[in-house]
Amino acid sequence: MTHDAVAARKLAIRSRPLGERVRRAIGYTLLCLIGLIFMSPLIYMVATSLKPPNEIFTIPPTLFGSELRWGNYAEALKYAPFLKFMLNGLIVAVLGTAITLAVSALSGYAFARLRWRGRNAIFAVFLATLMIPQEVLVVPMFVMMQKVNLTNSFAALIVPWAFTAFGAFLLRQFFLGLPQELDDAARVDGAGTVRTFFSVMLPLARPSLAVLAVFTFIAYWNSFLWPLIVINDAQTLGTIPLGLQMFFGQQGSQWHLVMAAAVISMAPTVALLLLLQKHLVRGIVTSGLGGR
Image 1: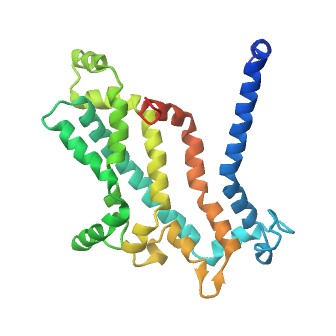
Image 2: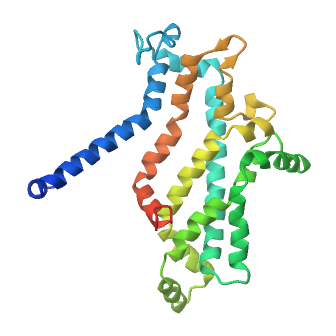
């Protein structure tokens, strides 16, 4: 931003009525306070991960300990094969996200732009599956994985949850908002349904795909119940939530190591959010989650 633009912006702010400036200041202050409240568990987790183990439950409680023990992070990585768990989690989350994006984009386009008999009725039934909690599905899903000999494998962690209705709903809402003239123009240029989808619709859906990618990656990354049931060899195929469970044993809970490992486990999700942040707000607004 140039000096003249900055000066013009400051002049515009000063020219606003006093009441409007006061309301804006109060609004920003409230937003900062609410943001601080939501960030307080994260701040406490990071602070606890740097405390000595004998100062975690001191009374009165303190935010930071007598020293910052950065060695807790190295000790957490040595306490359990945590890097192996992170690699497993990345494999599951990346592959699961890729499959989910592909399936959701195709199904969302079919439900939104193609005309076929029973489309709305099938979509309503498909959408109704969102009301079924995961806890109800794990038993029949586990039996199904047993029958096809996929238990204790990456496929069992990825495939069952890659075909959900949320992604189809999200992409359908976006495709419904695109003008019909795009399809007509592509058809005039000689493009068929497949080419229209890949050349016209899919590039426009990048913001919504970014939102779905973040939600799906976090869901796979943080999944605990399903890996706990379907994985027998946690040392080899365990993901991050199963790895964190190893810090709770017969010798007590290593809370300083738990917090350090939890901070380390946040790195991939934070990196993904930073990478896709420019698409997130636009994607939420244009995909139907922003009240459109």
